[in-house]
Length: 294
Image (cartoon, rainbow, N blue to C red; front, top):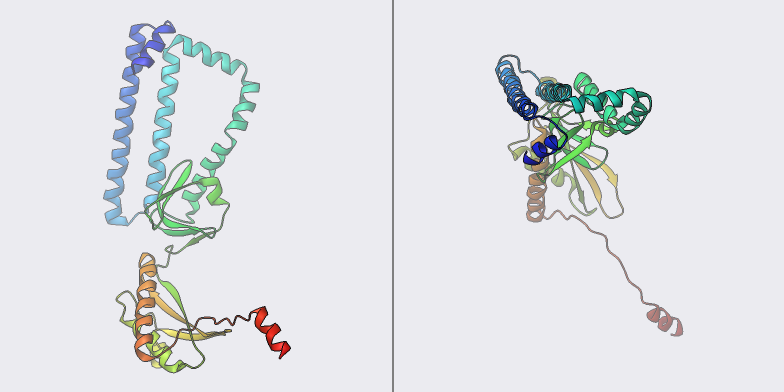
């Protein structure tokens, strides 16, 4: 702040104007904080009654801050004659400046427009679990004018520009329908009892507290199992089975998958079901030459 004041004094700005600028900055900070507090309060109040999506409120809060600070900067420029003259000079050469500013701000405007489209069309919302591309997965924490903030499962924040996330493939695990079908794949040896293996997989999956029954009454009447296990492939070393396990919380699906894997492995060991691994036979060239001589 002291450096800013010295700079203004060096530019011939009077103390009265310096005080005015400081007052404008302080009022802007206070007003911005008040507006954000009112928006938060309004959201909390309405969300209890209407269950309103927080995405719009977060985006509107960030947009309101941008508008407030833009107005404050304009007032400061108008209050200081030197700044006002500089602004007029810049506007006088608006042709060249607009081209330069347009090129420099092209990506920024693209992010803003993409952010507006995200808020309007809602391919994802704050709180959703999404996968972007093939690697970036996590919970949406915030959607700003420029970027989207995602918290991954390592508690790291991934900052992705809105223009990039809008042009990529997004897999949303929690939009509209919260039910998640988790595929759990297990390979068993050709010598193992396949019926026993399927029974163990079903029992261990059903025992998990996060596993839910999504069958209709008609499916229950037809004796369709809660956990369906299919033989999906005859591999080189194993018979590959896949279980369809349902849960109603996307964030619980990963932990449920890992827990069931552990319990299946323990049951397989107890019941004598082998999970095969590839065998390799190594033949040394020296041995081949010796055999050929004999």
